[in-house]
Length: 350
Image (cartoon, rainbow, N blue to C red; front, side, top):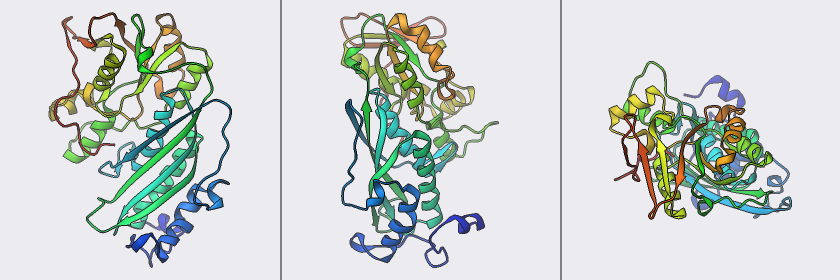
């Protein structure tokens, strides 16, 4: 529905262009209007406003970090977020996992013919606001419109560049026996927020995605000189995938305590209904940190000073092992192997 508020805020004449139409070959009047009246004003900055085929920019001294990701979530809007804000958060979080301060993003839109213009504008505004809150600029991009039935509404690709301003080498291979394993907050909300909408599940309180930037607490840890060995955001495959990938790369055993892992009751209930393990469910605003044992208390204290990581918890330790392994100690004290998710992961949740 095209609301009066949207008509007042949208720069495109909605009555004339209520939907995105086909722009063959990437040109055409509507495509030009999208660039001039939607993407340009929303993402305006001195670099983007040059309107050149490539962006030219300077970066502070230090190593560069670069990442890219594509977002195909369905539905486009979900409790706690949408495809636009999630694209920004996901990319800046990937940069933060190497200890980088995010600087610039590129953004490419693949739009299905017939997408309501109001929906596109809502996504663009959400991306604009998320980028501002993360302190990054979108400095280059691309827009393509595909035939109806070929794009499922909207796909977004983002690439991010950040600067590493410290001497630490943050990587899975740096994990070593004795390291403390810390998660930044409760798990499983993003995947369950989307699945609850898809499956029509009703709970006493709505499950909202945890989609959010985690840059601020990471930079705070670095500023405090915390000995960080590895960081990993808990997206596809959730905590279980992240721990197994790190254990394999470092050749260590990671032992975690199920009672210490924070999962909300409504998320537990949703997972039980759908036959899922919350430790296998994706998150969009959570990470796991491996830090030197002596730094565990300080790490928790710093993380808990930031809203996005206020529920940070120590969940386990790294121990020596002849083979890479992840074990989970149950509530009754029995340990079992925590494997990677088996079978197909949840489709179209990020």
